[in-house]
Image 1 (cartoon, rainbow, N blue to C red):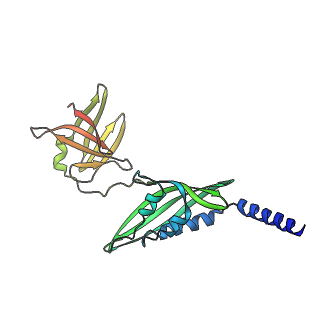
Image 2: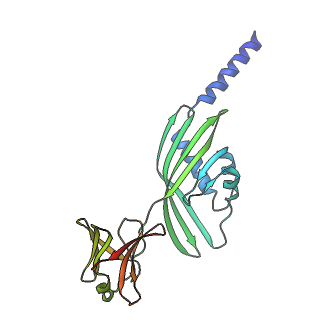
Image 3: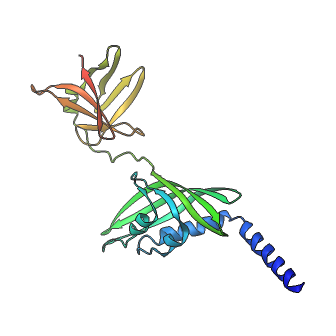
Length: 236
């Protein structure tokens, strides 16, 4: 009878332990441990916290399984250092599944020069056999406008005009002093210079370029997105 009771209570204890939900603080602690291991190339936490059948989608669009993910964790080269800190974490836990969504603020130093980047990451943790592991992770990088360069207002005269995508689909380029603008359907946006001939709009991914014809005159506006071009031909 005593043996049966011991066995019974042991089984209950294990079952209860397996059902204990993981806290957000613990999820954040484990995740920060993962990021702290990147600079020295310490693979141990990544082996520990990622499930063997995990799916990892990074900000570059790569889809990695666990062996490829672990192989990607290597020490930074000499002269490189940095940190990644978790901020703005939120979590949801339902049964044996926990979702951790957070921003990852990265600071990288390359031979004394500092770079910053911001990512948003969502990790799905799954409890199996009493252990919590990441079964899926997906990251994307927040868009940042490029650094502003200097425009050459002397070239604005070549850019000013009306450009046509298709019949009835036009946009116009105008200048006000040393500032250049593009307008379509009543929406006017400033074209900010990255270089004297490459422009961007604040908060809009992509670039605006002007194409020169053989005679040295601008014959088209190029709306470049993800290295693909939409051509607006100059109408007047």
